Length: 212
Image (cartoon, rainbow, N blue to C red; front, side, top):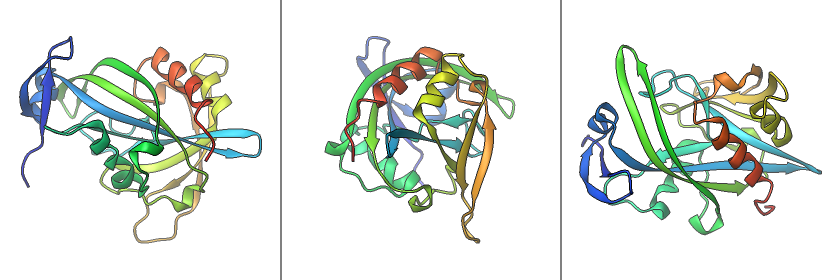
């Protein structure tokens, strides 16, 4: 398999070349990513979906995160990056069906299995309303451990520090057995640390994503 290469940028979003994925995270080069948050409506209540990252991921393994997200490889445009929905969740949605929410500039760092990383991203964030049950999603075993949903009101309250914990219902990637619902108690610190402002801004914007 050919190693992934990313376009890299300076801090003003000027393109400066390409680099291997491993170098991008080791040296902290700026690069671009695609985020998509999926919501669904149940009566008058809007639910938001999020995933738990696989424990083998090279950044923030085992953390809860955006419904689907991914880096733009060298030469890719945002329209191409919507492939992440199909790859991670089995959702074949045209790019035109997505609602642009905001662009986030993020600098994250940490250490995984003794290897430090610096993740600097310009992230284009989109929303999608898709009224289907969790069991309808086809989770990518190499990327996604499980998929959860909670009332949007509850997740926003969590990141506003109005409540300490939420109870989320989910399905786990189980290639050999039938998928069953699971329930988890989740705190804000269990999520990838995109920053409180990122979460509150995105979650507030999700109320305005058009109904499916």
